[in-house]
Amino acid sequence: MAYISPTLTLIINAVKKTATAFGRDFNELEHLQNSVHGDKGFAQHAYDKVQKNLQEELGKIKSGFPVLCTSGNFDAKADSYFAVCPIDGFANFAHGNADFAVSVALIEHNIVTAAVVYSPISDELFFAEKGSGAFKEGFRNHERLRVAACKNAEKALTAVTNDAKILQNLTSLTSHLRISGVASLDLAYLAAGKLDAVVATNANPCTIAAGILLVKEAGGYVFAVGETDTRSENLQNALLGGNIFATNEALKQKIAEAVAK
Image 1 (cartoon, rainbow, N blue to C red):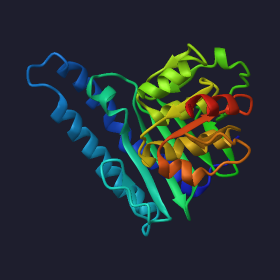
Image 2: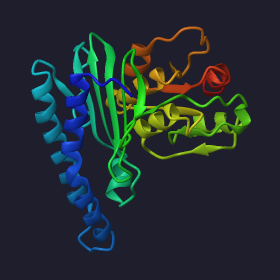
Image 3: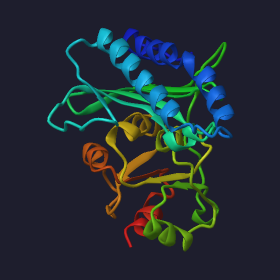
Image 4: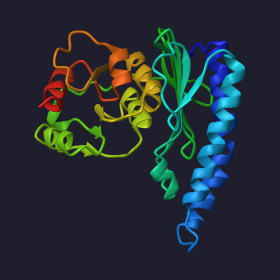
């Protein structure tokens, strides 16, 4: 059974409370796909509503902590804050595609200490606390997450953002590439062993902060794209730079060299 601190419990509850409207909004978006009025305004309204509700709920947990979101300017000067992506995979959501997630990370003194990634439509919730492991929520027991043990780069299922150079470099390493447009969920799936590697470029720190902790607590590694010395990590540099790759022990050097070309 996973130990869940009072703070993480409150974050999980805030995410779930905020996400209750997703089912209704998502169903409405599916109907709007064929509407002459379009769906962009509706999707943006849903995004703004989720962001507002998360800011209010998280503000009750740590009243002195700013709640930084993908839609605003990321204030790198703050060393303690919530990093929030209300709808990671917004384009998917706006088109009635179920691949999107809510991502919330608590960062204290530049260290990610708690993380939640929630896929509302599939009702998959992933959470982690620094030093306490990463888990997927279950009805009776929470499932402990561990990164996959894949050692063959050619067979590694790798999630990647739509970066032409990165795609070309990785194609020479593996043909098993996946583009989802949801970096937070990709990282959660890496932590759960459903993916073998993730490469995310030009990512807002709010979209990857929670996923980084999930990967680390599941036994994985996270580096900034361009790093080829994988003997040690600089997680803050990777987070704020927004260009990362994450994988397991066996693949980290091969992925590092491939994306650095």
